[in-house]
Every structure is written in C-alpha cells, then in structure tokens.
Image 1: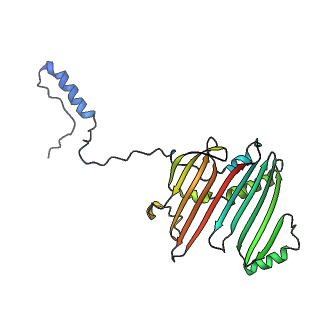
Image 2: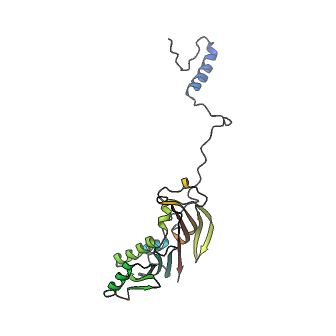
Image 3: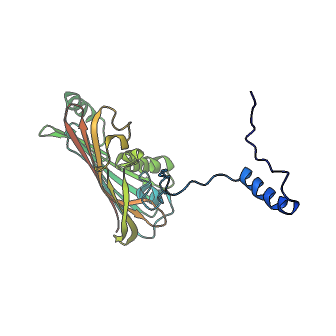
Length: 263
C-alpha cells in the first residue's frame, strides 16, 4: 500500500521563468484557510447585542448608595413597600428620612396572625419600649412597627438600617434570576435624571427562565418598571410585580414599590 501525502508540492519540470510564480501560488494554497461561501447555507453565529443597553444592576438601590455616601445636600425621603397577596406572608412598609448625618426609619410589617404570634405579642409587651416597638393584632392580622434612629458616627446602627431597607424592602432577589429587561428611554423623576427600563418575562418560555426560580413552581413572571439614576446607576424608583404559580395551580403575587424624593 502506498501512502500519499496531502502536502502541496511544486512541479519541477516547469520552466524556470514560471517557477517562482507557481511556487508562491502553491505555498499560498497550503497556508490559507478555506473561505466559507455565503450561499452554502451554513448558519453564522448571531451578532451579539449590546448587553449594556438593556441591562441594569437590579441589586443596587439608591437608598444604599445615598446612605453610604456623603451627606446629601438636601434631605431625602425613601419609601419602599412589599405587598403580598398571600396574607400569611409579611407585607412590609419602609419609610426612611436621611438628613445630614441622621437617619430615621419606620418599618411596619403586617401578616395573618398565628397562635404563636398572639403568645409572643402578649409576652413581649412586658419588656418592649412602645416608643421603639409596637405590636398589635387586629381583625386577625398581626401588625408590628419598629422605629429606628441612627447617626453616621454609630456605624453599627447606621448599617443596620441600610441593610434592612436595601435587602428587606427591595426586589433585589428577583434580579438574581436575570429577568428580560429593555430600555425605554430617559426620564426625570422627582428632580433626578434617570434611564427608564421595562421588565417583562411573560414572553420567555420555561427553558429561558432560571431553573432555580422554578424549583417548586410551575411558572413565574416578573413584570414592571424601574428607573435607574444616571451616573450612580442605582435603582431610584421601581414598580415590580412577581407572580408565581405553584405546581398545584395556586398563585401568589408580590408587588414591590419604591421611590426616593427630595424633601
């Protein structure tokens, strides 16, 4: 059996005058990669879309940015709500004021009371300060209101309020799932220059949604609007709804509302 090499070779019986030219062509054929014809039907990779245009950091909120920065030129008011359709889950309301080096927060929770709640509320009333903590049960609903005051020099108390608002009162956890987002345009909100975004997963199929979010669920949808502060790129204002459908067909809706205003 004869093995034939697939290397390119140059004929030696060609006239000397043509040898150099033939050699260049032959060597070029050896080193050049074949070009794919445009009409071969071969699929080309889609062009990558500019991700920055339709993306914002849904985990960074202006409450955290402003509170951890230098003292604002004007006092600011933060209003964040988490509203649950399931009464057994806690609906939350955060109202905070930032002025110079002082920070005040009123945090109110409301949920369907249990026997354990009734027992705890009764026992805790003997040692809690009503100026700081108020607990009551009315029409079967448990209500708890906590008032906090902090100065910038007290880093522990200050960061406690910042963490409470930025993690407890915002939809940051939803954006770990990277829901579909599109840029709408620019808009001035409460005197702040922002970029407006629409959030909508309703056109995504189950395969496009995060497998983690579907753990224990049949489906979910995240919809709404967010306004991102220019420069700082934190979420200044938002109205986001998270609708979940369980495998048993039951549904639950959580609505997140937040805004920052100058006083």
